[in-house]
Image 1 (cartoon, chains in turn purple, orange):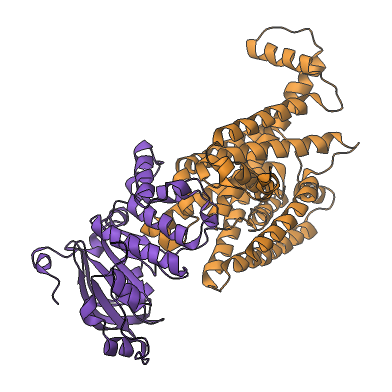
Image 2 (image 1 turned 90 degrees about the vertical axis):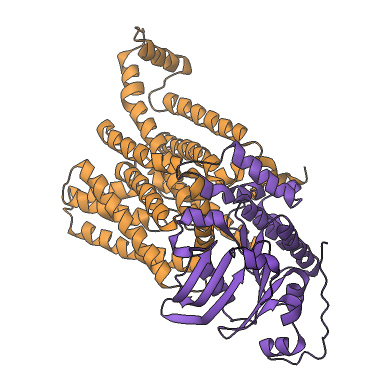
Length: 263
Length: 352
């Protein structure tokens, strides 16, 4: 895998070796080996039911690995405390209706929790960081709006702002473009590129090879719990690979175009 | 004022998020006003001026020229009862807001979760065994905890497609089971002595409140409020999905145990002194959320103030409206049922 010169020198932000993962009593993915380097965007590409969400839950420390090793900045994942982990890697779930209409600013402030002692509430500094996160995503005007009244795209941006507020360097996004209309998909993809330029590393999963082409540097393709391929986006995403990944004839839609939105 | 009516129906942060303080002050004023009303109305008339004279004399330790009977009514009869009503209302409302956050569901309350039924069974059993008040409270706590634990266990074991429905249904079945336990104890109880006490108590009443019992309940409620106050920020995150809360650094299991114990202890303390008074835990947090939004640090004080005001209003009506005391549980149900139906209707309409 040619990740460029920097990769050779630096310890990967995230490295996964021979990982088997799954639920208790059921392994859904086997032999996953890949690395994500600083300032890199990796897309995990695969059909429904490929176990992408389960992989992410394992990487987040929510499910114990069945075998193999996960390292964050060289240190094994299991040696991280929960709060330390929350400050190191941050999770952006799919946009969803919240149960209570929290104001967007309060949702973003929740990202500060891992920096607070157990009995503490966010203080002035935390508010500033939350406001800066809203500003970075250019959604300050949404701060006082209730989360459940926002559009899917706006909700996704607020959740990304919450992740920014954790000050973690590694972002894990679970299908950030799912359930969004075309315009919002492009907006969220552009935001992922901007995360990279602000010094973050990003891991996200998607159903769409186009999205992987548009905003990732590296692609991991997985099907039926196995890695089919991993490498630079424009090298591994090709017609036979996509045809194999999704088990379809892709000749009608090929070629896909690589273009970076938001640049 | 196009938004006016809508604001009334659906809690909208444009109005509340930036200004939680006025709402809190409003609720505080309402409570103080209600306390004043509760002191002066009743079979024994006390004018506001006379009330102030007595209170001022009590505060400064000075003398007053009003009849001693009036002082007894204010200080010995109405005072403890008002204090108890405030306490019970605040505790039930705070517990309701906490459960709603924790179960990620604005439609749960101590009643629906079977906590009240569990606490009742514990308390009724204690009355049946002629145990002292402290034991009644202790058994109410254990009963409530067992009920909420059972319902939670069923909810997590039956990972169905609709967790809210599972939760509510298991609350209903556990509540029914506990109800038949109560029925059995009533059947076995001594019909001249214990049965009336149990029946009277199950209806809920503040009529025969004893200052000593109130002291214990006040202590339990204060003790369980402290962790809720200090954990107020993290309690917000319990309303996210478990994965989200954990990924944000919250020890979900530990936090949930602390928070459930506190809310259940509060409910049990309220049930132990006042009997079963439903609906407050469901209705009041909604009203508070409409005023200040769902953020727990802002929600908790307003919820407690409104709960106290509502309970005091209900109890005042209960003792003054008719020649006999109306059980306050009956009154809260009379007001709460239509509210709940309206809530269901509105939720269904918003989802469609």
